[in-house]
Structures are given as C-alpha cells and as structure tokens.
Image (tube, rainbow, N blue to C red; front, side):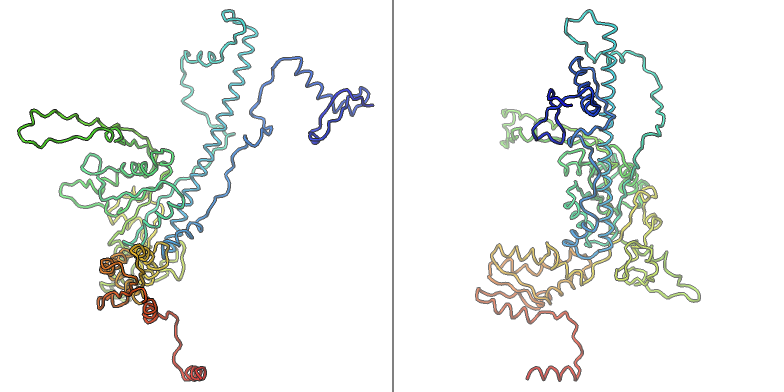
Length: 568
C-alpha cells in the first residue's frame, strides 16, 4: 500500500503534475523503485563531496561535448570541373586530373584536421584523468599528513605536486617510447604534386586560379625565371613561401594549407655554363628538393608601417648652403618579423611549356626509319606539329576517350624529363604529369563567346561605358580565331587581335553603334559606325555575315521540287 509522503518525479512526466508516492516496506516493487533513490540521496546529504569524475565513461554529456565527425565532403571533382567549365574552354582531360588532385589535397587537409581534433580531445582527457588522480592523492596525503604551517581553512595547492618533480634527476627512460598496440594510429596520406605540360596560352594557370577561388585557399604564383641558388644575385626559393604568406594575410595555419604554382618551370633545366656552376638551373632544383618534400622554412618579413609613419625627407637643392642646412634624420629601420612555415601540406604545382620535349618523346616511341619495313618520316613529323603516332600508344592514359585529342606530350616519362635537363630527385617528387593539348580554331572561337568572362563580353561592357553598342559578325569572330591560331600564342593571341581591330573605334568613341565585320579583321575595310537610327542596318549586316553552321543536304531534284511546291 502506497502512502503520499515523498514526491518522486518521473523522467517521462516532468512536464505533468507530480505524483506523491512512498516506499512500502512490504512492497518489493516500491522498494525496487524508491530504494536506490533514497539511498543515494541520504548518502549525498549526510556526507561531503567525495565523488570524482571519470572521463573514460561516456555518459552522454550533451550536444556541446559531442565528438566532431568527419562528414561527407561538400563537393566532388565533378563539381569543381563544372565550375571550371564556365570559365575555361576545352582541356577536359586536364581539368579532370587537376580537379581530382586539388580535391584529394582538400580532403587530406580535412582528414588531418579531424585527427588533430581527436588527438587534442585525448590529451585533454588524459590531463583531466591525471588531475583527478593527483587530487585524490593530495586528499589522502592531507588526511594522513596534515599541514601545520598553513592558516586555518586554507587548502594546500596542488601545484606543489608538479613543482616537486622539477628537482628530481631526469632519467633517460623517456628517450625510448614503447609501441602501444592498443592505440590505433591513423594512416598518413602524403600529398601528390602536379606537373602541367603544355604550350603557352592553353589555360594552365587560369584553371588553377579558378579552382583557388572556388576553394578559397591561399594561392600564389611564382616565376621561376628570377630564382637562383642561395648566395647569388636573385631570389631564393623561399620567396614563393613568402608570397603565399602575404596572400594568406600572414596567417601561418592558412599558409601551410595553400597552393604554390611555380610557373615557367622548364626554365630551370640544366644548362651548360662556362664557369661550371649552374646557379639558375640545377642549383635551384637542388634547393627545391626539401621545400617540395616538406621542411620548416623561416621567412623574414619587413614591417614598413613604422617607416610609413615617419615624416618625409626633404632635400635642399640650394648650392653652397649645405653647411647651414640642418641634417635630416634617417628613417627608422623597419621591423623584421620571422615566421616559421611547415611546407609538408603545401601543394606544389609546376607549369611549363617544355619546348622541344615532344621531339624527345617521338624519337623514343616512334618506329625506326631504317631497314626493311621502316616508315619514312620527314622533318615536319619529328617536329611534333604533325605527329603520326598510333592511337594504341595512348590507351593506358587516364581519362582516355576516342574523341580526345592527344599529343606526344601525353607520353612524357621521367626519363624524358631527365633528358630535358632535370635531376631525378626532383622528378621523383612530381607524382602527376598532365599534358594540355594546343587550342584548335574551334576552341578559340568558343573562347571568344562562351565563357563568363569572354573577350566579346568584356569589350561589349567596355564600349557600354562610352556609351556605345559594339557588335561582331560571326564571320568576323571566325576570322579572329583563325588569325590567333596562326600566331601560335594560344588564347593570348585573341587579346592581341581584339586590341588591333578595336584601336580606331576606341579612339573615335562615342558612337551609338559600332559593327566589326570580316573585312575589318582582314584589313580590307574600316569599322562601320551608325547613329541612333541605324539599328535596322546593323541587324541587316549581322544577318548577311551570319554563318549557317548546320550541314546543308545536297541540291537534288527531289528537294528542289519540294521547295518549288512549298513556294506556291
């Protein structure tokens, strides 16, 4: 029988009205429900605080103390490629390789950050356990050996337990750490550096710049032409780390996770010198070994804020009065700040044109031209412009597709790069070798119109500020792409052609309507100008030079008869 003498709240009915229950000595059900509660409350009320917290027990401490999980990524390589496709035309195989490499680098950083967070939680957990054990030991020592020299009510500091260990003679047992098989160490994933080979103006650097804006990671481009060996006139290899630090706004943690692009990397090839020491080629390659592999680099950055706040120095140009003029004070020396950067997690991307490497590849993989059955090859074939390699040689390449365009650069091996002038130690640290194909005439035409920042859109927006309306005919755009392909400078040749064609319209601005035709590109006529009422004439000229890109069927008798019947 229950008597209403004590209130017991149920966890499931806390929001409801409490019920008053009491434990009946003769009821086993009531004893099983109220016995532990009454016993724990009596122990807590009658005794002081003697309980300790055990961090090893996972008792569900709430959402604030939940462990952070390594969730799924927010994007995948195909998402990165979709972003790049809106800015860069062509180079599908290179985009897939670059996006996969950048994505794996990003995932490695996330995974490393997760492991560091878990290790920090374990260290904090062990510190709490050690503090709990020391506190229990301190309480036991205080009960057995009370302190007489302290004031009444003053507790002994636990800090003395740690300070007493300082005066002990250190032993050498800590030099050897035994292996603990119970601790699961995570697998360490090394970074994969990238080498991009391709002619100028095909989008090597532009693809990387677009991806860096998508990931929002520090991104720096360093020109290898100015790099020299340490101790000689020029820039050291640590300059690229300093530029990356500036791009990261002097954030060391962000700098250690950035991307460094070494442009014009082919200029570091070994060169024959008269003095016998190549300080701008092989010397720089030797200096890049530890930097690419992973090392701690100390960067000295001058802080010019103090010199900027100094008053300007005035110079007295009056001859003969130099003795009477007061001496000007020298500006204060700039403060030098030192930053230590770990390059282990910095991704290095090497870019270069590698002119002449295709000839080395063709000589290695081409069939012999001597003897019976030999194929006669001309100079144009060995130059790489008209390569006649069988398509079976490209089947082992990644992202192989029958519709893709391959070049001899795709078959480049570390042996070919070593013949080009690079040391094998540096070549072994370049794990991915990706070649970009030259841009065709169709690719150049698409570059003019399709990307977000296309040249036609840029110059159209520029002429709107005059204000003027700029129009290009289809034949004019194809003529621009044709002339740019002949120049051999890739997409940069399009900019040169646009500046040449629009030189006079820019000077004659403002005019309401400006039309560029095929004759303007070829130089046979000038750009056409119209007033505000010339919009219909502009549309008519655009229709005249519009290209019909659909394939027309041949003029047969049956088709002509159907056309005559439809016309009435």
